[in-house]
Length: 155
Image 1 (tube, rainbow, N blue to C red):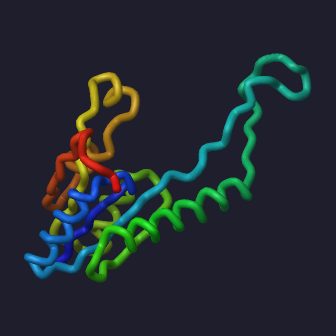
Image 2: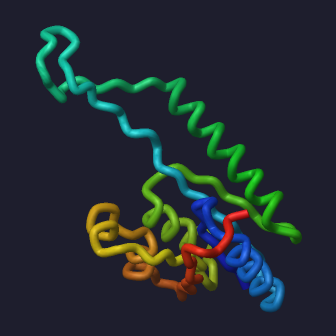
């Protein structure tokens, strides 16, 4: 059996322990996946040529993107070392989180996808969307949602 645990590195310790315990009891291989979005190009609010407001110019610095990727990799590695006492397979991917989670689940032929489920307000859901909702709606494999409450510790 294979379990894919998709993390955003903000999961409370209780949640990661519960997933690790579940995978141990099921004698399942645990694949921990962290997906991060690439840095969007930042529009300049002022046209540098005319000085007038114009959003037609975009700034992109590859060095900034590289630094972001290295930082994500470092944080993910630290998360794995701190949170898991047994060996896990780790995967760090760039892309849109929900689509990447679903693609990875198919590619790895996992038996179960595990996600943390935060309780967002209506406005927050409307503005930000929900990776969890998108995964649940489009998954072809079972999905287990681990509730995350505001009072849980993040370590």
